[in-house]
Amino acid sequence: MDIALCDDEPPELEHLQGLVGEYGRQRQLPFSISCFLSGEDLLSAIDQGHAFNVIFLDVRMGPSNGVLTARKIRESDDKCSLIFATSSRDHAIDGYGVRALQYLLKPISADALGQALDQAMEAQAAIIPKLIHIKTRQGSHSIPLEDIIFAESDARVITIHHRAQEPVRFYERLDNFARQCQDERFLRCHKSFLVNMDHVRSIANGSMIMNTGQTVPVSITISRAKEIFASYTASKI
Image 1: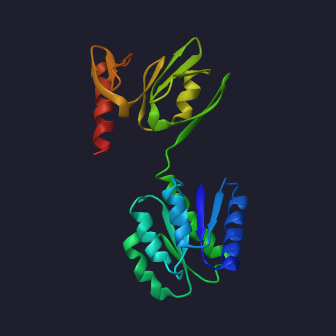
Image 2: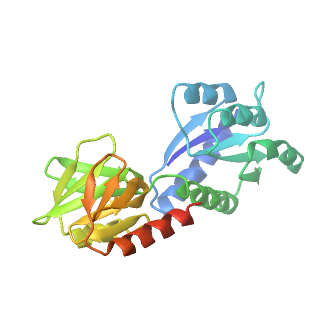
Image 3: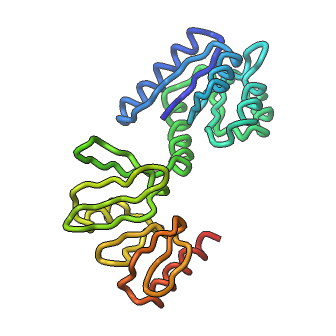
């Protein structure tokens, strides 16, 4: 979780950094905290490719105040959680157009910051892709569930076929792997195959045809497979 703190007063910035760091330590969350003394410095970092999940902005900063900085951030990032720090509630109305998650009145208390970060964590959890962590002889892999096309098992060796990379092979029972992938998009269509229905193009002739052109055998009845696939597809509309 990458968090940016932006305030043009060093003591305030240091205070906020301490609160955020303590929040992460208490909850054992891996935070990366970056501090900025101006909106211009923050925008420069973003322009250079640094993406933040949560951004704290002081409302009163010059010349690019917090609200103006937030508007520029929203031009390229509509997913980050924006939290304003302000000495007056009068500024709250200014932030509606940038979908601010929360306003914190200075001096910021640990309780108020904790509640705001709890909200931000919930918001980001709905955005950040779910990952599955695999250990192989070659090392560790973190694969987004959405990237998995299908997994197949042969003599307890699982091969994960996923987007943009070579297949990943490791030793595990498919039953255990399926429990790790506990998600409505996955279907155990065969004792040796687990498919991600987001990547299924069609079902015919005893097989599922994936968007990649690969075919996966189906051992459950075709009518049942089609029923499950149709129900899952309809739930996404």
